[in-house]
Length: 211
Image (cartoon, one colour):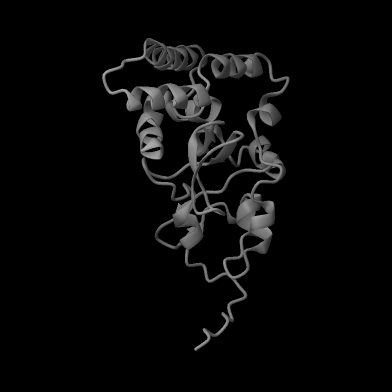
C-alpha cells in the first residue's frame, strides 16, 4: 500500500533539527557576527581536510573547504548551543542563521540547494583585520589538516612507526594556541573559532574516519 503523503506544511517546534546539528554559516550570516549576536565562543571552525558529517549525503566526508558553524552545547554533541531543551525553542529565533530560516523538514529542496552555496570562511571574516588574517594563515601553513590526516593515516597503517613530523605538527599547534591565548586573552573556546579544533582533538575523529 502506498504511504500517504505528509500533510505537514509548517514547523511543529519539535526541536529535532536543532538537536541533530547546528547550522553552517553563510555570507548572509556575517551581520549576526558584526552585531555580536554570534560571538567567537558560539562558533567553531571546521578546516579543509578534516572529517565532518555531510547532512545531504548522510555520511562523513573530508571537507574540501573550511566551514564555520554554530558549536554544540556540550562536548561531543552537535546539538545547537542555542537550543533550549526545556521549551524546544531557539534562543535567538528572531536572529537565527540562514540555514535555520531555510530549513523546512517537510520540504528539503531549499536547504539542499543552499547547503554548499556561499558558505562563510575566515577569508571573509578576517580579510584586512589587523594581524589576525596573517596569524591564521601562518597557523594554517604550519598545521594543515589535510597533511595531518595523511601523516596519521600512514602511522596507523604502520603501527610500529612514529612519525616525528606528525608529533612536531601537534606540538606546534598546541604551542601556537597557548601563545595566542596568552597574548590576546581570548577564551579557550574562542580558539576553535580562530584556528579550528586542535590537532590532538582531531586524532580520534580522523582515526574513526580512516578505520
